Image (cartoon, rainbow, N blue to C red; front, side, top):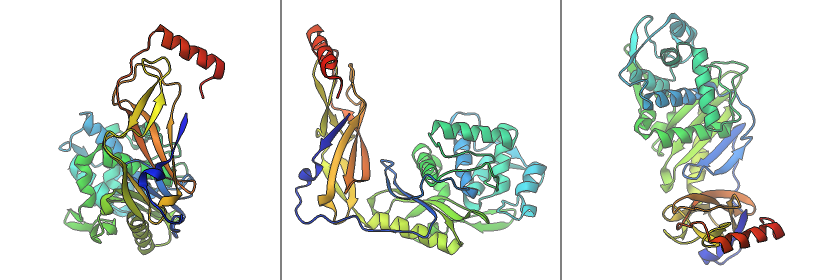
Length: 380
């Protein structure tokens, strides 16, 4: 069910309506996502298949972190460097590498840091083999997690992102994957902003050059192959708001850095923050079929802050969407609905809404009345 909300009236603003500022990028694929709500506020071929290159390693890390959380792996475990890992991902391969020594053992924490900072292909393979026995089995774990996360456009065949015709993802999926890592594993997020890592006497700078630019970027991962071009998944919390940006299909490292920087800067500066609903303020009501009360108030989790295009406040409209019929019992704090805010028909933000109170099952008369209404009119 969808309930229309005159949200612009709450803002009590006057003036002519202005359209959202235009923005474009040289990237073939791009997404800018609001971390808190998951709303995509800019997209360009967001659901088109792409070769994820080393951005694949974000899924590798997600599997590793899940294994650590489950207690099956610890940061202090040591994994063996096989000939396959050394030959496929080591110095001789010509790709990004940790320079791991053949037949050595390396702590999981050092392997994780290498995957993040150095984009070490050998480190990613060592992790895959250490956890699953083989990279092929590890890829099954990657796809199982991708399915659990709803990454419908993704299929992973290896832990590194080395070229494979069957490996694919989308800009939207990569943004969602970055959001998942930030939200679920904050205790490991500091690794993404480390400026460099030394191993075997070789010091390598973080491949995400935006980390050192002083613009608030603190992650996540870059990628490149000859066929796919240059791409990155980046995040920043500048402007009192965390954003996740994906750009891909660019022609050089310099272009990748500049396009990611432009997208993040635009997202941080082209929007302004409003709080139309204070903590506990009812946003709308949802009908409760057969409840002790006919409806339940919907509130945000704390205050509801909206980030809206500058100069575009008069373009606003909003809806509250929920799955009807809503059946009792309803418990205070249950997630019931979603507030969707639009500017000139474009979705600019979404926020979850929760039940403001308990609604128990109604008496026989209430249930009979609602049943007759449903028979007569259906559930609108």
